[in-house]
Amino acid sequence: MRCKFLFALCFTLPLHAQTPIPDPPPQTSTLTVTTRLVSLDAVVRDAHGNLVTDLTKDSFTLREDGHPVPIRYFNHDSDLPLTVGLLVDTSGSERDYFQEEAAASELFLQNVLRTATPATGLVKRPDPTASPAANSPEGHSLSEGRETDRAFIVRFDSQVLLLQHMTSNLPLLRNGLRLLGSKPDKLIGTHYGGTLLFDGIITVCTNVIGPESGRRALIIMTDGDDNGSRNDFSSAIHSAQAAGVAVYSILYTREPPNYPSVSSAHPSGIRVMQQISKATGGRAFIVGYDGNITKIYAAIEDDLRSQYRLGFTPKPSEPHRFHSLDLRTTDPKLTVQSRTSYATPQ
Picture 1 (cartoon, helix red, strand yellow):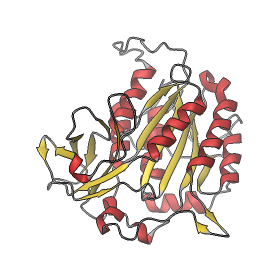
Picture 2: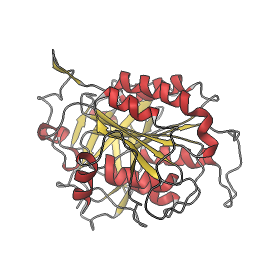
Picture 3: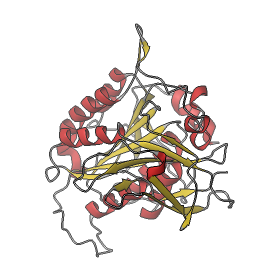
């Protein structure tokens, strides 16, 4: 059913239409894979927060459920295809920021996406001398798939709407960004929202970005408040971890950074997005506190250009069961940014 949905989503609907994405299932779905390999994308920083880009395979140690596991492949080549999703909160509290978000997002996509050109073909290709495992993480073979980078744009409020399908076409992505502030047409179906942040994350990770090969990142612009999702916070994290998607959060919020997070009635939106980003191997930024959105996008771009990719063979387990991961370096002064859990491949 999921394959049929994706086919219809990508090929039968007008590109410029605001496309409603079906409500996600109540329980999290995991990425379907075809080989028992699990990949991890990681970013490493020193004690001063500077990126460390000269490590080798022997610089890392990995534990699965507390037990050491050997690293089967290692790659520090940013030429692997990149899929970037923009998930934008268009609820009432965020409407003042649409123009700024669209302008900065357009520049970011222009800088980070490698696209094919008529004169030279692809800007870069995966290294053909790399090990087969390095080019086939979690069941995806890069040699059989695309080699350009692609992006898509989704908005969410009381509905989750696809503004632009997966593409490497920058003009189409620019047009999708222009739809952020537009009013959606009346849609058929029942919606429960409010602000469907958790449902949006699960829907995108399960149905849109999860099946893509190569590196995957989801950039969420929001204040971190969820109102009306049928799925919860933990399910949102698990969906991103199962799909191998690093979540980068850009928070537009009037909430102070030290807002208490102990209240279950109204949890801190900042803390919610910080936890989602940390658990999935991304980072969370607060516009204003961490600089303007252009500076934040530059930091995300640096991350995506500085990733290590490691892989291991998981221990025998029931499919779709989650297991903890602990990736570190042999130098205790260095900090590793990577997802903290995975779902057993099928």
